[in-house]
Image (cartoon, rainbow, N blue to C red):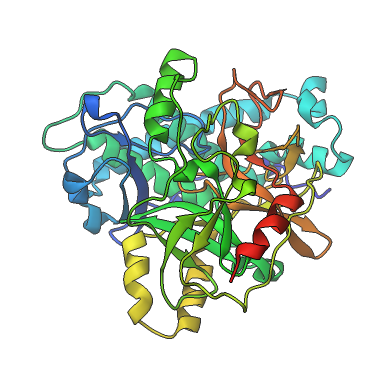
Length: 442
């Protein structure tokens, strides 16, 4: 393994390593998702989806007319964010603190426990295990690690900060933090081996929000996450997180009014979406996202779509140590929908593909796959739910599952206690389930 350790590199010049966002920098997404009883609140997606801070009321930009579940995404001028020098000084101060923590970590010798890694990765292939353990000390990990530390420290320090009636300086500054994080941790991966599967990507749009994703598995049949079609999921999960026990009412899987789907490889129109009533989807009237986390997948149909040019995809079994790619599309959904009248369909396809972002670090790996779950540590954000998880097998990326979220350190998923490592997970979709829905395709 190449010696890419951060200790062999000169210290980071904070002022130049992290570029100040400009008026053309794209910010977001931010999510309006608080309980109606506490008013309109804003929940910022966490770097790893795993620690949402308290909601903060906003009055700037388009959020003045936003509804619960909406999100905001755009340039500083579009969302009304003021990029002042004072905000950037705050960012640099937290970046400096993050760097101090990182430098302290680097100064400590790698003890046996660190070298061996957490118990979850003992059975990984030696080269994969070594890459995961040593990655935090590499030059490639420096900026991302510091950006994550800075963002989390800022959120922790400002969790109970008062909100101004005229301007939410805390949340606006956090927008700058998130832009820095995304540029430091995610890349636009030009890996040509992904071209065989990216055209099958589907993104669901509700208003301005790219809320979830999916993958075309056959004709117009899309595989996605079950909870993406549960209208009351936020209220239910909030109650569970507050009380520690699942609410005693059922969650139903339903069609989402007004939802449209965009297929990356077919940028000719946006499609209406319908949940399929098929055996593979199980009981659509009763879903518990905690006790049935390993069943968090769903098949839906794109109405009027005829996608014969796209390849049928059949999932393969996960293997611990699989290198993963989980594609993200950070765009304003309304702008994507309005773009069907510009350029050729081929140009629109190329434009969306060029916007896909990935975590390409060694951490984006299948650590364990207990039961029908896939545990990984890929960088993810809001809007990733339902995104296909691709694993590199030889020179080809294969579909191995669906990303569904993250779970608390004290939580248990598929009989797996994650402690403080590897918070993200997905589900394995049985090959028989995919085969059984193919007959419903036109």
